[in-house]
Length: 258
Image (cartoon, rainbow, N blue to C red; front, side, top):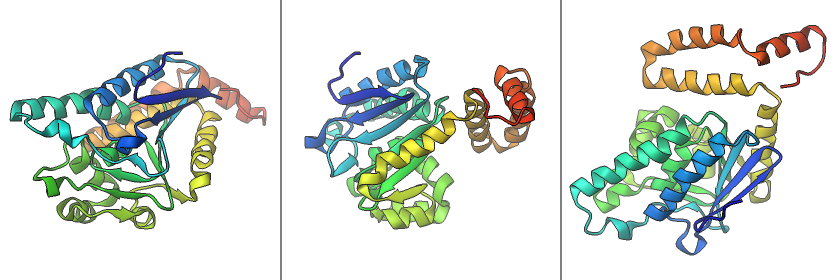
C-alpha cells in the first residue's frame, strides 16, 4: 500500500482508518496535507474493499487544530480565493458527498479548518475532552472551508453565529447538546464507538446508504428538490439487487446478505 507523508492509512474489516499524522503541528492542515487527503479520498472511493472511513488525528491533543496559518502570510486575495475554492472542491465537498459513510473521531482540538473537516463528514464522535471552535474572526478572517454553511445546518443560526462571531471553543458536552456531534465517549472508547456505528451500517445495503446520503444532501442544498429526489431514489431502489435480496430475506425470516 502506498505510504503518505502526512497521513497514516490502514484498511481493516471494510474500514479505512485515516489519521492526520502531524502531531508536532497539532495536525494542522497545510497545502501538502490537503493535497494528500484529496488523493487518498479518490483512492478510498474507488476501493471496493472499503465500505466506510474513520478520520482522526494523531496524538492525544488534537483532531486537527486548524489550517497552517503560516501559509496565509502574504497570500493575495486571488490566492486566497483559489485556496478556498480548491479546498471546497477537492476535499470538503468530496467528503460531504462521499458515497460511503465517513465518521470523524474527534480526539482533541478541532478548530478552524479542522472543525470544518469534521463538519464535512457524515457523523462526528467526540472524546470527552475534545474542544471545537471556529476562531477565524480573531485573525480578521471568516471560515473558508464551509463552516458558515454546514455549522448552522447542525446547530441552528443562533448557536452557529455565537461560535463564529465570538471565536470561542465549546466543549464536547456542549457540542452534543447543540447537535454538533452525535456522541461523546471516553477517549479509549472513541474508535470502538465509531467502529460500532460503521459495522451496523455495513449490515445494511451499501446502495441504499449511498442513495440516502445523496438524497439528504440534495434536500439540504435545495429544499425544493429534496422530495422529488427522494421519490426518484426510492423508485430506483426497486431496480437494485440489494432490494431484491432485502425483500427475499425479510420474507424468508433471515438476515440479508448484502
